[in-house]
Amino acid sequence: MDTLQYLLSGFATALIWYNLLFAFAGVLIGTMVGVLPGIGPISGVALLIPVTTSLTSGLPPEAAATSSIILLAGVYYGAMYGGSTTSILLNTPGESSSVVTALDGYPMAKQGRAGAALSIAAIGSFVAGLISLIGLVLLAEPLSNVALKMGPAEEFSLMVLGLCALSGLAGKSITKALLMTAFGLAVATIGIDAVSGVARFTFDIPELYQGIEFLTVAVGMFALGEVFKTILEKDADSGEIAKINRILPTKQDLKDSAMPIVRGSLVGFFKGIVPGSGATLASFLSYLLEKKISKHPEKFGKGAIEGVAGPESANNAASGGAMIPLLTLGIPGTGTTAVLMGALIMYNVQPGPLLFEEHPSIAWGLIASMFIGNVMLLLLNMPLVKVFAKIIETPAKYLIPIIVTISIFGVYAVQMSVFHLMLLLACGVAGYFLSKNDYPIAPLVLGLVLGPMIENNMRRALTISSGDFSIFVMKPVSLIFLIIAVLWLAIPFVMKLRGKKVIVNEEV
Image 1 (tube, one colour):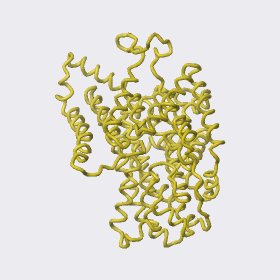
Image 2 (cartoon, rainbow, N blue to C red; image 1 turned 135 degrees about the vertical axis):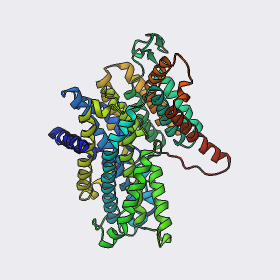
Image 3 (tube, rainbow, N blue to C red; image 1 turned 90 degrees about the vertical axis):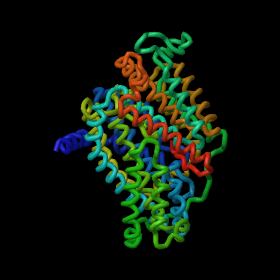
Image 4 (cartoon, rainbow, N blue to C red; image 1 turned 30 degrees about the vertical axis):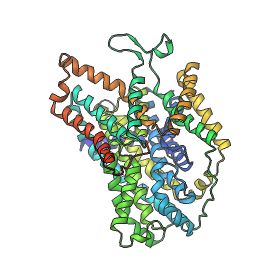
């Protein structure tokens, strides 16, 4: 009964007129971010953090945090919707989780069934969003109550598990992902030590006493990094867009898609809960499942609507599922949720077990807004399919200046410092070269976000044990988390040594 009351109060928050506007703006921008190849949800969310800070400057702190996170979360799951458009019409995934959609979506488009494919993707995404949100409502309170009983040793081990989970399945090389995680943790130590008051790695530069700002790194690495990639590699697609005739799917299309949508939603939701899994793996598993149980597996890859319905439902359900460890445990499971976590911390809101106790209006307002946002997305995507298809044709020469302008003005509006603009540019250059050489950026950002919390919990635990490190293995729950973390890294490594192919999550 308490959960229902909290949810109703969340709807009261989400239905405030400006929060409705923020939700609408978020899902609309998110859809466009998903439609434009190369930008992706991480870059979109990072780019808009400074914009939301400016837009909510006149609101009280709690209301500003709620409105901002409503908009940013809308960009996240809106981008998951939009990514299917380019996969189906251009055979070019808007982001990595839509790669599988292209396998059958594009052949459907070539057969003149692009409208049906896009509509089924939208319907599947809507159903998946609802299923994952129901799961979020049911699991949020019990999980946060369990997490509240954990001490600093357990929290330290849980965060180490979160780091290992994302790093172990990020990019093409586990070694490179771990190097980036370690670098992120090292960058997180820059600034004044909160306990001793000693300046660490600041080189007597006053701007570094506050530490390296998460916002500058995220916007530089993700948004400007993509800009440099587009400029230097002429990374603009000029493929031919498939024509859209009939938009609504037939009764047979709906019948063929119904069960794949349900199965994809469940696969995606449970995969999304596991930190490090991401939407890419969820959509891949859903596709394999549908092909395995199909009576006509030979249709897959040639325009089977089940090959669109299942994966699209899975990647949207995974984005909802990924919100559970973020909100209840303070563990971001994907690159985008790591950026969302950084945004919450900027507003002095700590995601984790205390979020539902200390900031119920933010937690439940966000959950309620995601219900509303999913309805908005369905109403937007079905009639405006042809409009979003036109957005794909936006030339890079118009898009690049817009992204650069938002990045520079956004960071300057928050930091009011030329030093941070120089750092933004440096992060953009670094982001380009790192991604060009297959060094995943998300583990670095995650290390930067989680670093201070890991250090804080480790110090608290060592204070309790009088400096005895065995506290981390003497506590049963802490030991279990550490064992899982080691296995998470060791199992893919052992599988590679034995010559088996390991599926990695390139979304992060």
